Image: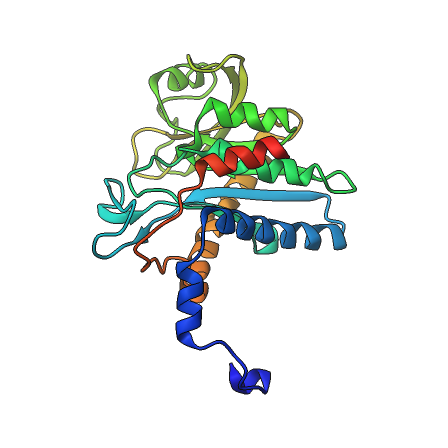
Length: 276
């Protein structure tokens, strides 16, 4: 770094360590807002009017007795389980929310995304946000939040008997031809017990050669005009999110969590949401 900047007047390692140890919850909140503002500046400068926002969770290993480190049954290891949001089409990070390792995928997602949605409303021109998420984000509070901010969403649903029964009405359970692959798309209106309204649900029934039954995938969306196949293609591209997470960990050490303390900022996110 001294050679790059052409100066020896740089902070020593001890000063940097003291700075990191002195960070507070407010500092973490402001750093997250800085990340978001940088992304918004890029969008505003380039006048991007459609943004595909991907939300996910990931695992960060911990070592020793670290505050808020907990066992996560899904990953089978102890660590943190933060929420992350990216704009995949632009390779831009929008925010990270630290959480204990035992938190469920969607826990705190409303408080995490509400400030991001509100910040986009501050832009001088209209931007259409489209949210993608896997089945871990199948929660009515997220649907309601998106609908409040006029954010379009495409979120995978976990398969259940009620969905299969509705899909049986227009898609076959057993394929007519077992010697060829086939894909059938369909849609219907559906309301789970926890939903207050009916929502559009898409179904993709896929048959592979050698299999006896169709494999079905379900997606819920509030996009009423786009075709079923087009929406499925858009959802499938959320796989780029995994690459962005890997790049954040490998290139920017996002999972380097060797500090003995951690700032859990759920209450501050609520305050931020209220202030916006």
